[in-house]
Image (cartoon, rainbow over all chains, first blue to last red; front, top):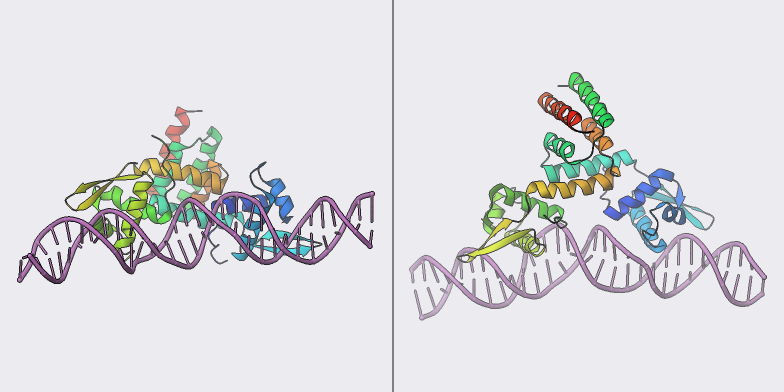
Length: 126
Length: 126
DNA sequence: GACAATTGATTACAATTGTAGTCTATTCCG
DNA sequence: CGGAATAGACTACAATTGTAATCAATTGTC
């Protein structure tokens, strides 16, 4: 898969709604967004732009367009994640992880899960 | 400290250069940026914008402006980090950490360091 | 002291983003 | 069938961002 194009902050909100319940019409997408976040026309604009960018596709069904994503959330996270890493943490993974461990809320079970993952990771590669 | 204002991608590059060697003049900032990244005037524009945003300050020394930051890199990382977390990972820390563990390069010693941190974190809070 | 070089200040300008409104075609209701 | 509601298409418009160029003041240099 080619790199996902740049997706703006607001476009991300629309994408998340779509990923959760695609395919959807523009009206359904609005309904899935946090109450009163945007007007219908605004959502429409974002859908059009996302399609232009090649991130989603639409099919006419009756008199409505039904949208679906062309990239998974995982793919977009990969792209956005590596951008963030290099921009904010100069590409240094460990300091970034450290930052989040220090600055964000982690439950006991989150911590356990992560430790297990690090164990696996530690033994299976150099 | 109040929240740092929004800092764009290119502005971040300038900030990183400044954090590494402040205070600096515009000419010095350019010299510190990756070779041939921008023209001098472009760097000047970013410095002016950053000052307008209240992220850096300048003092006239001779006929040059000398710039210094008003926020630490840590502070800006906190702001940018929580934005990223909520935008891309819907505010869920553990899935984000997992993502980076799976998708980015971590050395043995990185992994050890992180495990130790998680140990501390696990015992010192609920 | 006149001219060149250096710096900051001001201006420029297109692309992207946020946030819709208007215009038009279709379709449902009575 | 005629008007109202609805969905998409097209248009709008200011703020931010990337990328500088021009204008003007200052300062060395000969």
